[in-house]
Length: 524
Ligand SMILES: Cc1cc2nc3c(=O)[nH]c(=O)nc-3n(C[C@H](O)[C@H](O)[C@H](O)COP(=O)(O)OP(=O)(O)OC[C@H]3O[C@@H](n4cnc5c(N)ncnc54)[C@H](O)[C@@H]3O)c2cc1C
Image (cartoon, rainbow, N blue to C red; front, side, top):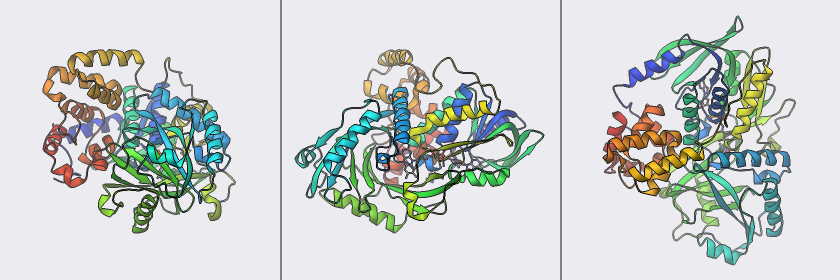
């Protein structure tokens, strides 16, 4: 089975429907790029009564937004470069996200182990962790100093030979991965009236008679069509410049790229903690949980191009750092690599800044939202998943700045459904499914669409059973996802809607007893 193949005979009809949502339709705003920045912009705009269309040339979240460390954090490490304002903003955004997405984000303890070569002593790191905790408004559990003996007891997989101590502090993790978080946001935007499609490339854009006229190609049907808008929003991530070239516009800030690689390996610790170390270049190196696996990384290498791949040096570096810092029954080797993640961090050089190779690692990781009044264009440069709510709100401000009157929604424009809806769901699910673990998972994965999953199970109770131990999705979930999440290739489902492609080795997946059923569910 080729996991990239198209799924079903209904594809043409589904694509034609998508094309009709854009073809010769005029929008208030069109958003180019369906990563986290495009997703949050579309959700914010649709929630503020703006008529918005989102176009993504590949699958949603198939750019940098599927390659992150999955952390929603306040940027503890930026205290190193005294970026207190950035840390305060990130902590604020992190806290808001954690409150708004209580089931999709989990507070995790980070255990940072320090040895004699680490840039900070345990007492100084402890002080930093407390400052970080206070900047974060004490919203997480209190940080703690940990002695090498305690570290050994808490995390036997950590090599304590040369440790001088450590600190434990908290930040948050996206439990179902970055890409699913982004796609949920896009589906929420669609529910609030946005038009959005994956596999649609903007090939030309021209401003004529006070309107942006876009030529778009549907990558599945290979059909071309036109659409237009008053305002254009450039959220093309590392390809922001390409969109500028296409639209004959410029941004005052510039982007440079830092390549980051993670490797997914079998689970290293059962504790759920995130292990942190300083690598040989004095950068933080993490062991992060992902489903039933662990992710090790990352690298941080200045590159000129945004198209990057994992090379031998990356693999050697990550495996040797992990083996140096961990005490495993058997060292990690290439055979243990289940999946790779690689992408570029788009870093912003603000207007007037100089791109010097020697200090690029100190570049702020803060995003910039630029408004071009003359061309009625808004560009988002840089940014993080952690900071996405600020991006959404700054895009609304930018539109207001362009003279557009948006309408503030009566309720919060982002977040999971309310606690009242949650109670109704859990109450109904108890009667229909009974089992609480599955109920929690369905709620976390599907949010407001969880009711639809439940309806399907009520009508056909056999659709509540997971396909297998590894493929822990039930047919009712898969059919709900296919309907609402614009799945066109099996890879969309395996890599970006679920953790399967990253946590189950491909051979195990295709020989799994549930795999054929999965393909059938996706093809119905
Ligand atoms: C290794 C690594 C680790 C990271 N870890 C974290 C972390 O733990 N926490 C955190 O908050 N952030 C993290 N980040 C940063 C974060 O992942 C990125 O900043 C963020 O995902 C960028 O999102 P984006 O929407 O700007 O770009 P993208 O996700 O790349 O989206 C841009 C989209 O635009 C589309 N596009 C381009 N041209 C066109 C066109 N002509 N027509 C239609 N579509 C087009 C692309 O296909 C792409 O999907 C990490 C980044 C890296 C690389």
